[in-house]
Length: 240
Image 1 (cartoon, rainbow, N blue to C red):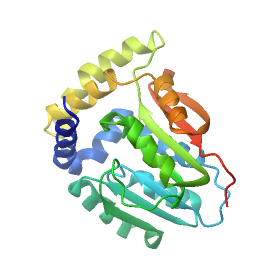
Image 2: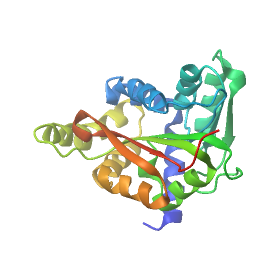
Image 3: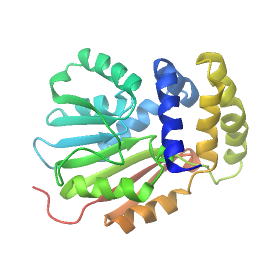
Image 4: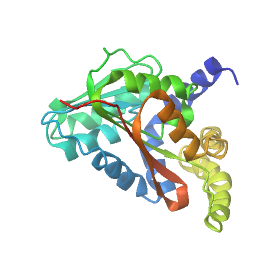
């Protein structure tokens, strides 16, 4: 599929399922998605007193809100290309105690409208599989980070360990599209979700792409036999 076609397809999918997105995340992951997001934020270990964090592909804002809660101080900026998802993120922001520290912006993760070295951390959750050019995505993350800044990416991957891989194939590749049809009335969107995981790169390939972009200290944390992974990296240089 041409990159422009995939971009439009993914944007349309997320606009369609926005109102049911959070519910389906909780159901499909058995509520583990909230734990994984908290783990992603805690993995940052920022030293700045008032860090500025960018959430690329912020969606309905769950990761940005988790960052605001965990970090206590600083500013969180969420960027996403789906109007419908951002409308829900803004509603959540109004109900959050730290709403004055969170800002949501409409835009593309492959053309983020920010100056170089503007952020202490770049975080992202369940976004990589939807990106048409991962090298460009990581290039922008590297460009936007200050020296010593942190990258943390959370995403889903095809698990490699048997017998969990067999269970996962039956559940995620076959059952999840039907759950999407039942709860979101959109089987096609959740068929795309299943297919995007099944055909995605192995975690080690993503780690190598991150290294090639210029990050150091790149490592992987795996959950559920590698079905969910955190990728962590650091931009060389001393932090502020």
